[in-house]
Length: 71
Image (cartoon, rainbow, N blue to C red):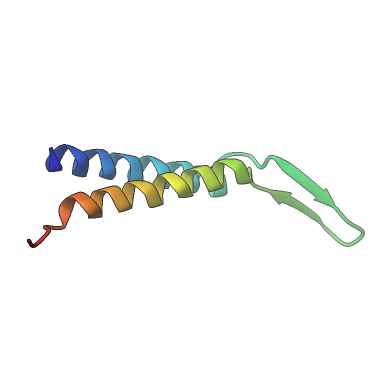
C-alpha cells in the first residue's frame, strides 16, 4: 500500500511540475497589460497555482509514504 501511495505521489508531483512549467514558460500568455511605457504579457495564473498545488501535494504524499514511522 505504501509503495502504491509513493508512486501516486511521484506521479502527481511530476504532473504538477509539468503543468506549472508549461503555464509559465511554454504556452502562450493569457493576458496582456498595456501601459504608457511598456506592454507585458502575463501567464495563466490559475494553471500556475493549480500545478504548484499538485506539485506540493504530490511531494507531500510521496514523502509521507516513504518515511518509516518508528513505534
